[in-house]
Length: 71
Image (cartoon, rainbow, N blue to C red; front, side, top):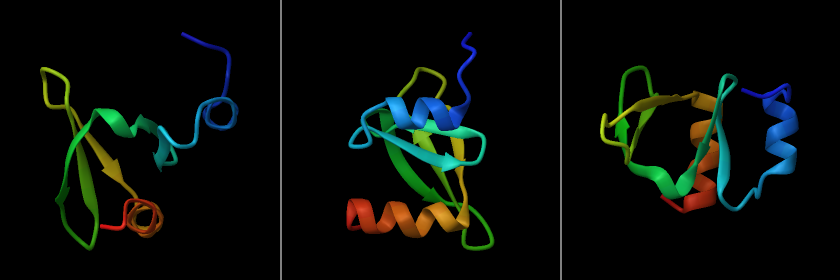
């Protein structure tokens, strides 16, 4: 638990490691296992945890992540 907003955390954390995937999600890119197509031009990030958690990637952030990862 923290009193920081996601924007505060985003500013404090290393931008080379952390990425704002959606307005409600901030992810550590080292823990992304794969990026899978979803629907409507959107994608999901599948995480490396035991549960294989999935995080929605917004359409706007898809463009940003594509440029950043050169994917």
